Each structure stands twice: as C-alpha cells, then as structure tokens.
Length: 250
Ligand code: ATP
Image (cartoon, rainbow, N blue to C red; front, side, top):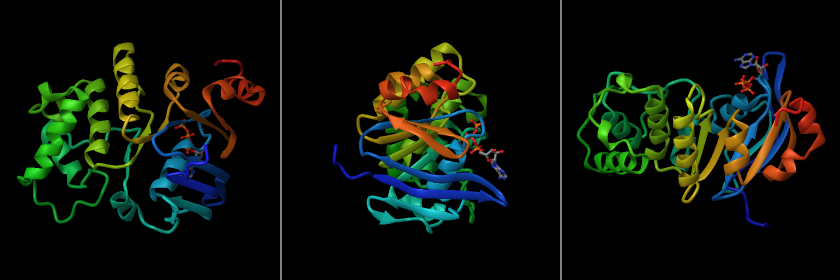
C-alpha cells in the first residue's frame, strides 16, 4: 500500500573500524505490520537493530521515524519517540520480581540504559498499573512476585518482551525472541508476537523459519550486510537467491 512507513532506513551503512557491517540498507517498516529480519549468522541483523535504535551510529545513510530524521539521535532520545527493544541476551534485573522489572520498564528504565541516579524501585501508581496490564496480557500474572532470575528460560524471554511492551512503544523490536526455547515456549511466543501485532508494529529477528513464514506480513532477508530480498513470506520463500543463501533449508 501507499501507507507511509513508521520507520525507514535509506542507504544505511555501519562500520566497525574498517569492517563494513551494513551497507546500502534500505528498508521501510509499515505501521501495524509484523516484519521479520532473517539471514545467516553475521548477516548484520543485530547491527541493523543497533543502528535503528541508536546503539551504534550510522556511518552513512538516513533513518526516519514517522518521517522525522533520527539518524543522529542517541538511543535514549529515541525511546520516548516510541521505539522499544528486547535483546538477544537476557536483559532483566535478575534480583527483582517480575512486577518490579515491569514497573521499571514502564518508567523507561532498563538494565541496559543508564540508571543513575539509582533510587531503587519507587512506588509509582501508573507504573504499577502498566506492569499489571502487561502481566495480564502476557499471561504471567501468576509469577508477578517471583524474582526474575528464578523464572524458566521461556518465562524470562516472555518477560523481556513484556519489558519492551511496558514502555508503551508504537514500534517493538525483538532480537531472536525464541532463541534457546523448547517447542511449547516457541508456540507461546509466536502467539504473543501475533497478538502484539494487533496494536503495535513489530520488527523481529528470527532464525525459526516456521514462525517467520507463519506470522510475518513482510520479511527482509539479509546477507553479508546487505538486503538480499524484501517481500511477503511467499515471495521470499520462492526467491531463488534466498533459496541459494539458505541452501534449500526453507
Ligand atoms: P547472528 O545471527 O549470528 O546474531 P547477525 O546477522 O545479527 O548475526 P551481526 O551481529 O550484526 O550479525 O554481525 C554482523 C557482522 O559484524 C559480523 O561479521 C560480526 O562479526 C561483525 N561485528 C558485530 N559487532 C561487531 C563489533 N562490535 N566490532 C566488530 N565487528 C562486529
């Protein structure tokens, strides 16, 4: 459709020293879609997330959010504009409860952001309401008072998605939300992402092709720092270049 993208990258490049990790990446994320990013290890998927969220600076190209140029905004200035993100590695306060973790996320504080000055978990009515809403939506209310570090791997990954949701973003980026999960947890995560797609825009990196093909509106395939193909799951699945990149494993 002709709908304006919520987030767009135009000829984006990222360098790590002399290594060109992303080059000429042009991408448009349409609002209220589920958009996945796939590609072999080292293709640049996580680097793309780092660039879109401001964790690394683009060495050239442009990033726009709702038409506004955010290329040179730091990550903490992008969060209030409605971008939230979960990480490939666990990013929870391990010693705090599920509810406390979500309250902090609702206040815009995560373990990966600067926390100074640290004042502990303050009682905050609005944050508590948001935390309870998110737990209910994610089906984790029963573990509200459990310490995050004691949750199962699947529950921790679910809570990480909840941390992103609690920031009330319009755009949620999820980095390999099903990594390390068993079949039941994978199915639950798939249902959760699909549910989030009803009222958010979701961009996610995923290696599980079943999920990608099942719930994505659009798939971007990356290889060696570039976009190889972008299109619907059907278009991507039938693309000869993609088939070659995956050696037929789709
Ligand atoms: P995976 O599926 O394994 O997570 P990916 O597609 O997310 O891979 P990236 O993590 O973005 O790929 O890495 C892209 C390339 O950039 C890789 O060759 C990687 O070795 C390199 N790279 C990533 N981070 C850095 C860094 N901080 N310094 C130098 N090179 C880096």
